[in-house]
Image 1 (cartoon, one colour):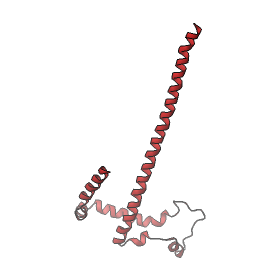
Image 2 (tube, rainbow, N blue to C red):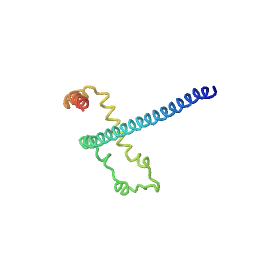
Image 3 (cartoon, rainbow, N blue to C red):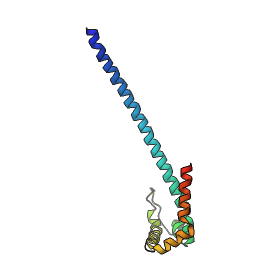
Image 4 (cartoon, rainbow, N blue to C red):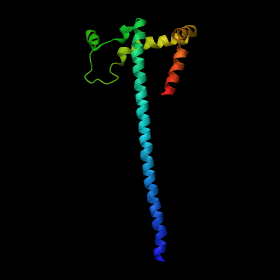
Length: 140
């Protein structure tokens, strides 16, 4: 009888081991999916940033504001800007503060002038291009 009483316990232990193995496998798959999503989000954000930077340079030139955008390290040295010993991603934010303010002011101008925005939309056929981009994404 003792052999029979161990048998259900052994089965229970076996089932618990299988369950633990399945849970571990599920967590690995879930982590892999989350990593893939994170990677895809990063790639999408990089593509968005690249598109914005590439096109905003052209708009900036068209508006005659490139002098606020095309600032080089040589320009800063000519202006006697002291480059800090430790440079990080925030070290040069102040250099583009005027450009950011101009772009924010430009955005405010457009927000306050829907008539101009509508004219721009008409000139660019923005609704049509947005619809074709949506169609193209769905087809892929």
